[in-house]
Each structure stands twice: as structure tokens, then as C-alpha cells.
Amino acid sequence: MNFQVLVTKLELNTFVSLIITSFVVALLLGIPLDEVPTTITDGLGSQLGDLAIIFGMGSMLGKLVSDSGGGQRIAHTLIDKFGYKRIQIAVILASFIIGLALFFEVGLVVLLPIIFIIAREIRMPLMELAIPMAATLNVMHGFIPPHPAPTAIAGVFNANIGQVILYGVIVAIPTVIISGPVYNRFLRKRFSQIYQVKDEIPALGKVEEFDLNKTPKFGISVFTAMMPVILIGLSTILEFIISEQTVVYQIVNFIGNPDFAMLLSLLFAIYTMGIHQNTSMKEIGDTLENAIVQIAGMLLIIGGGGAFKEVLVSGGISDYISGIFSGLNISPLLAAWLVTAILRVSLGSSTVAALTGAGLMGSLIASTGANPALMVLAVGAGSVFGGHVNDAGFWMVKEYFDFSLKETFTAWTPLTCVIGVVGLLSVLTLSIFV
Image (tube, rainbow, N blue to C red; front, side):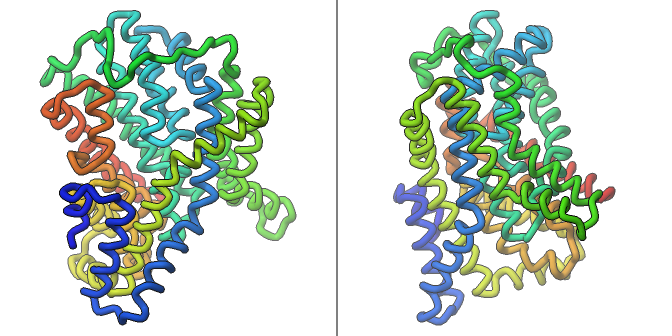
């Protein structure tokens, strides 16, 4: 049965739909009956095994930054420093930093109330700030670990996460500029009716404001949010400089291991965003528990995506598609993007599209020698392309931006297309040099 029919027509839970689809596709591909359950559980287990620590602790770290008011401190400080004339730059930088720690949906919930209050105070159309913010958060979600899709794809392709982060930041910069300020200017000329000063947004309800004097300082908030990326990135750079035979190399390699880097960052965040703020351990524990509750559904979806991917690989679909693209003499980066983009438009979920696309393209790396880190980014770019009604993010943007359905199609869907295409072009350009 078609996955999209189960999710959109029958409104069945995404995880359950993925498992049903995995069983049906496994039978259609002729996988022996006694191997079908094992194939599915192996795919689910291996996917979560690679991801659970990074994803789980990453969500906890982000929740600590959010609940302590660290995100609000970052946004307000940058806006104060840059001033209202360069406020878009401040919003992009704040979204970039906060987007490292928070997933797209959570980042939207944290940042939108802040920029709404600021836009209302200075009588600026909310979309002037909301579009660059959403574009930046979406780019971070698609390209930079520890976000679920790029982290999971890195595991599928056996890519070095440090390289994915470094290359991802390089690719993210032009993608954010074009999909943020440049697209914003174009959209305002073509669709000016959404650029209105708003005094309220029903979906936001009563906007909670922190007392900035009681929130963590700006520097420590930024460092805490960026600490996993800093540790992994520095480790990757130092590994090219230090000899592998030295003890220093082993220490650097251990500290920069994504699992340990995330654990270290979480412990640091517990102190800076919790204990140092005179927050009780019970409250800190509640925050960590709430973070896990919030991502439990996503973890199951990622596991289900891994199961579906394993079925496609075991059933020979991966090798078949790899053979098709090898015969067409097409760039493996473009092939990975194209397959994932088609899956994204068809399936809706960027994470499921990314995992499935990665599973289908895995053998292409071995046959073409493509750079695994760049393949992760190509799949990531395809996974954010063409968001529409079968994507949960589409409806979230509609409600939080107070859009009509037509306005969401006109403003948001093209924006995700721009991110996907510019992201691909940036990856292809980078591939010339690395």
C-alpha cells in the first residue's frame, strides 16, 4: 500500500505507515518470508544505533538552551548589536546559532515569538524577519549535524561527521543568503500582501517573555549552543595536522567523536544553562525528560525510515537504481539530489526522504568514488526541496506565520525549492575544490 495514502488519506501514524509499507514492499520485492521481519528489525536497529545518542542528547541540549532563555538572549543581543537597519543579518545569525542546537520546528517556536515582538515594536512587517529566519533554520536542519537527517545519512554513507559539518557550513552560507534576504526581496515585490504589520498571531497565543537579566549571558549561551559543532569541527581540522601515531591524536580523535562530543556538550549545558542559573536538578531533569518526549515520535520515524531503507537495499532496488545512474554518466551528487527530491515531494517527510534516498544511493559511492560528505549534503539539499501539503512543516509555517493555504503555497513552497536548488549548486561548486 502506498505510504502517502496511509499518511495523508487514512491519517495513519507515520511510523506505523512506514512499517506497513516496509512489509508490503519486502514481499513485493521477493524477499524470503522468513527474512522479512529480520530485515526490517535490522534496518530499524542499525539506524537508531547510529543516531540515538547524538539525536537524543542534541535535543536535550537544545531544550536546556531554550528553557533557560539562552535562545532569547542570543536573539536579543544580536539584534541590539546590529540595530534595526541590519536587523535581518541579526536574525539570520541568531537563527544560525540557535539552529545548531534546535531542530527546525523547535527553533521556529523559540525564535518566532521573539522576532514577532520586535517587529511589532518597530512596526515592521513580520515576514521581513520571518522568511530569513525560517530559511536559515531549514538550511541548518537539512545540512548540519546533529540534526537528524544529515546525522543519519552520514551513518548510511560512512561519512566523517566533522567533514559534513565543515562542508555543510560552507554550503549553508550562500544557500542562506539567497534563500533568505535575496528571496525575501523578490517575494516582497511579487507578493506584497503578506508583508503586513501584525499586532497578533492567533497560533502564538500569549507570547512568553523572559526577564533578560535572569537569562544566561550571551557568550556562554552561544558557546553552549555551538559546543558540539566546535568540538567535532576542531577535531576534524586537527586530525589533518597531527600525526596519527601520537597520543595527542588519539585524545583529539576521542574528544571529537560525535557521541562523546555530544555527551560532553550536554554535561556542559546542564551546568551553564541549569546549575549556574540556580535551577534545581529536579527542574533540569524535567527539561531533559520533556526533550526526550518531544523527539520520541521522530526517533520512531527515523527507525521506520531505516527499516524501509534496509528493505529497498536487501530487495536490490539500491543496486538497480545505482546501475541506472551509472549508465547515464550523471554526477552522483546530482543523482542523489534528484532521487531524494522526488521522494521528498512524494512522501512529505524530509527525514524519511533523506534516509530512503541515502539507502538507494549507497552503492553509488562505491562504484563512483564520490565524496561521502558531499553526498550527505546533496541528499540533504534534496530532502528540503518542494515542501507542500504532505509535509508537517508546511502546516506549521501556515499556522505560525498566519498564512492562508494559498499564501503558504506562494511563499513557503518556492522557498524550499530555492533552498534545495541553491544547496545543490553550492555542493557541486564545492566538489570542484575538495
